[in-house]
Structure formats: C-alpha cells, structure tokens
Image: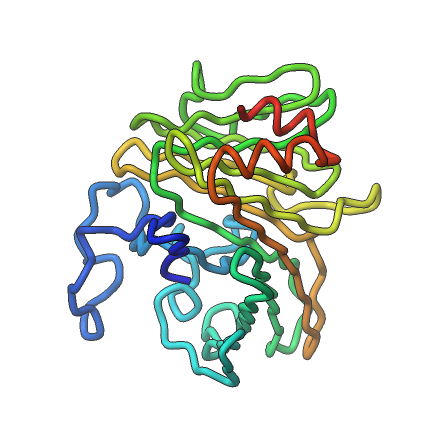
Length: 274
C-alpha cells in the first residue's frame, strides 16, 4: 500500500531516493540507499513481511514477496485483492485484501499460503512506514518496552499503563511491546491526523516470532518510523493458509479526536498521546 491520503494530507513515507527509478533489471540490493546496514530496498508505504526475520535469506525480506509483482485478483470501488507469485526460497505466497468501509475506516487482511512440502514456522508481519514526526502509542498495562536494537533513550517513554514512542528526530532504534487489548494509536505530524488500529487481542497461548505482537522502529537515516504488527506464530503446514486482519480508523483533527476521547474505552492511551 503506497500511501494513506486523508483530507489532502499524505501520511505514509515514500523513499525519495527510489521515486521514479526503474528497477526491473537490477538487483534490489543495488538500489541506492542511505541505510546500507539494511540489505534491502526501503520502498515506503505498508507491506506484508514474513516473520521471523532470522528465516530471511542474506538478512533481507524474501524479494519475490517484498519487491516482486503482485496480480490483481479482484477489485471494486471499495476493495482490492492482490496476490504475489510463489517465493522460490520460502515457497510462500502472500495475498492482501484492502477494504474501505467508509471515508475514515478501512481494513487490511493479510493471508500467507505454504506451497512447500514441509511445515514451517511463519508469522505475518505488517510494516507501516510513516512520515515523521509521529507518535506511536500502545496501552501495555504494567509491562515496559524491550529494546531490540539501537538507542531509544528519551524517545520512548512509559507510565503505569502506556508506552509512547516519540519519533521526532533521526535516531535509530527498535522496541518490542505487548499489546494486550490489540489496540494501537498513531499521531501523524504534530497535530494529527490520528490513526487507530485494532487487531485480535493476544491469547495466553499465543507465541510471536519476535516475542512481541507489536514493534516500533525509528530510522536514523530517513524521516520515517514504522508501526509493526505481528500475528501469532503458526507452524504452517503444506498447503495451509494463515490470515491476519487489521481494522483502521483515522481522525481528522484534535477537535474530533477529543470528542472520541470522551467516549473511548482506551482513555488512558489517548491521554498518554495528547
């Protein structure tokens, strides 16, 4: 998904170094980048990756799924369904269905199918690259953020119930977070708009490929950060398909946001983000 354009405002990052650059006849790793520590193109937008990243080849997401062609299987004024080719390395294919339910609500349903002959541990990983500055908040209860890499000092704060990542400057870090109620909140820019995402709350028996159902990454090289949602880890059998669905909503401005705040079940998270 290349962008979310709401009331004339673009909310997702698109890499300016790759904009308009032909890439069909070159290797993705040869594309220009300001982040050579990551051996794959940073396209921008929102995409489906496969977790865990330890299963990737040469430290990069499976190229056929991340940078290869997708076929449109169905579309209408309110939805589009896209299907990838079968990855020759992982034997997986990805299906993405994006549905608009109103002018401020949409959903993304990710599905992954194992075309191989053996089961494989698989998690669906939705990565949304957002323009910065942005704030990303999760109501974590009593738990704290776990640093995956980099330096989150002064940019990730916690109180008794919430963890908020204030992605307002170039400083590389990634943190992993619990997401007990399945809800997360993003403030785009200094004053919004605001994006809320809901997924099925984790169950006690759920395990995750990266130990946490939600991660936040902030770039030290480009003006973007990432909200990253994980499905539970599944031992996906031959011929089986797993799915993961996200429901999104966007608020227009602080006035609408404050009206929602008075009625919301997530008052603590909204208060932390204000």
